[in-house]
Length: 378
Picture 1 (cartoon, rainbow, N blue to C red):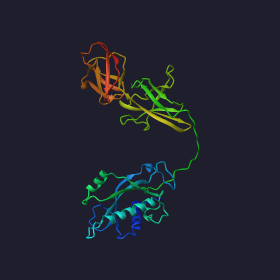
Picture 2: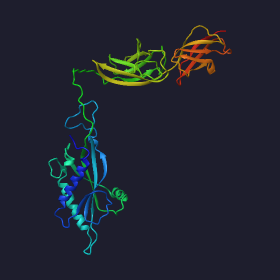
Picture 3: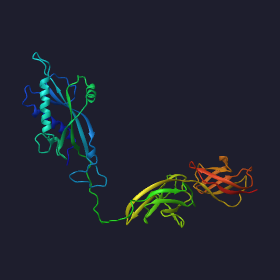
Picture 4: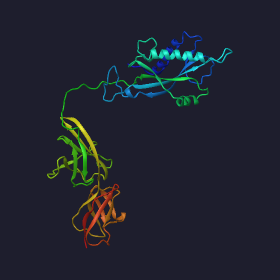
């Protein structure tokens, strides 16, 4: 257990008690307050002003000290540093002279007490019950503030600048309201030792790939248990949400650490994709890495000559509803192109197309594929 929402109030009370005890024997005895700098009063007093709360970086992800983590995703407590301004306010000037010396005496007595009690544990009489239980003792340290920093603080008030000293209090911990749920017990202990820190992609060639192409990927730290998957896209047909398993292709001439892969389907949507590699050993994950590539549309057939002026079917891979067709480098009229499916596009060749072989290119999903050669009938 740690202090809850009363942790900051507990520090306020602790500082007030230390100060009150320190000035108890002074005459005149100043009042001790906790509040803003511009409180309207002419009484001799010392005031604690909390002007800044910041995270304690050393304990930012601290586990609960009493229990430790008991879940995969813990809820760390809120670890804070509190920065205060201790200000001496003199009483109104009297016929006997200036009152600053009484304020200075009170300030010196307080500084002496804070120096002597710089570390406060739970058993210290000055430690407020609202600050308990403590994760570790409260540490009160003098915070050197330059004149510029002090002036900026006082500029926001309606009072003239007064003699002030900065103090920092840490560690202040506000407990998390999220209860820890115990995870399942370990049913089987497994230890795997491998000579790798996990797979790391070096390259993927070609960067633009279609169904039927061999994709050569170079991977460091590759193990026998590595699997390759292509990220699933919303425009893809129904399939595994974890990604499309890539098909392994034998590559006898490939250098060590290079694997041949092929796309599993011709009806995958075109566009930029993520290729993932995941290594496992004995059922335990060893590592994961990703690399980008593009799936591009391509014409795969037919091989027979295509007549002009009439609709003909093109065999394709990775076509999409926004498919465009380029014949001999010239874009065909959109009215002459009909998307049927990812693997079939209907096309009407213009009568002006010259007979013989011609290069044809598809563009879909903002990516263009490689040129294929078709035969235009005379």
